[in-house]
Image (cartoon, rainbow, N blue to C red):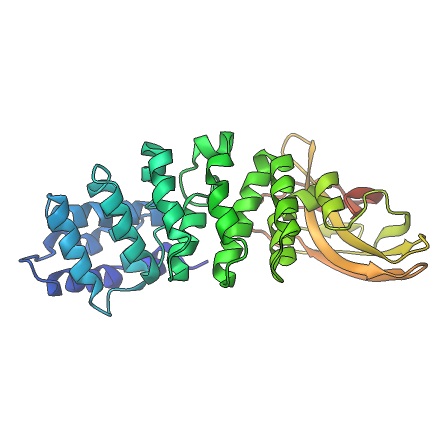
Length: 361
């Protein structure tokens, strides 16, 4: 992931100021230009807010005049990439009371990067009204705008405010996904899958029911979309999701291992283990093989984390053998603590074998 400075640097802000100035209307972009010198030490979110506020100070307070400047700036081919992101956020502030015209402007902005976070204040303000506009986007000729309908309405979009109403009840946004799951663009379909995965975290049975309905009238790409959209449920062993995708939780298999080859490791080392899974059924079976690390927490308890191994067919009597290396290199999203950790193999959501290893600092 690029750093905040790489995404929104002082040079990026200077380029944005030049684009706003070239649009005319007497805009000098003085505040925007000066904002670039104030960004050191700020997070990405803080940079966006600072640049947004500078844009709002430079552009007209009257929304129609404000929108006219933004549209003229859109004619500049240099106005592209991350410099457009805080402009979308400025539209969300200046245009919230105007609503439909402001959403239309965000649809014009989104092909330059994305306006997925800028639409969310509109969803918070009037969910039904915003979804009505976004439903129209699902038929837009530009895939970036079609994607905005799905991505902008994701209940748990990363790095963006959540939408509590859609976390509580995802049904109002489902027509967007129904209109897009067969989309010609993989970019759009991947957003639909991620939206379905968001739903699965709060309403697993709803997500499975939606996926089953799509599989009833599929496109050639639908099975792949559904697998991606139900990935969290597959990892967690949700019986309905596994069954829908042909992975019976009751599949007769035998598991050897995991056999830990590195029973004592330090932070920065690799855990190494091998395992074998045999299909003892008289028919070919499709298996999802994962492994689960039970990490020791600061208080001495353990918390599980599921990791992917393989998804494959196994013929009757066939055995799949493999060795896995799992890194314990320090990462920003997890803090390691010393102690006895566990690893177990999971086949079609069912735990089949377990071993321990010691992690030292």
